[in-house]
Amino acid sequence: MKQFTTFKKLFNDTNFVADNVNANADGIVDNKYSALGKVITTGCWAYNNAVKQHNSYLSDQVQQLQKLRDGFNGSDVSNNAIERKLDYIVNLEVTEEALQTMATMFNDLHLELYAEEYRLPVKTSINKKVTKAVEDADAKIAKYIIK
Image (cartoon, rainbow, N blue to C red; front, side, top):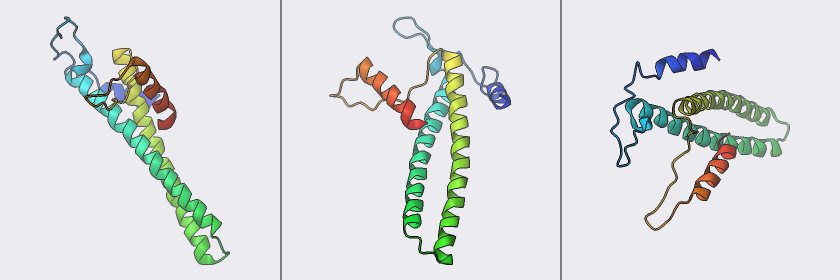
């Protein structure tokens, strides 16, 4: 995919510092926290959220189309409203495809650079313990909800 090749040329250690990370207490250097890593993870986060929000909005528009269709009375006004909504939904689908492409490219680059799939952060509270099973469940749910 030509887009991904161009994308990788932009988001690499030539354009963004990839080694500006100190070792943690265990002596491990995690380059996901470098300048490049933060750019990649921020892109993953932003586009995955954008896809999720856009899909929600698109679903709302389809529901409105259903209401227009259910209320169709054969008039030109009713027909025009349906045509406008259809055109709008087609445009939203084009945007959804572009957002999904960007999310996929960021996710693929994250996997390639850091040998792990990107996962959306899990909201936690001070009193709430997050286990590996909960993280795995969140990842599985996100896999099917986002796409």
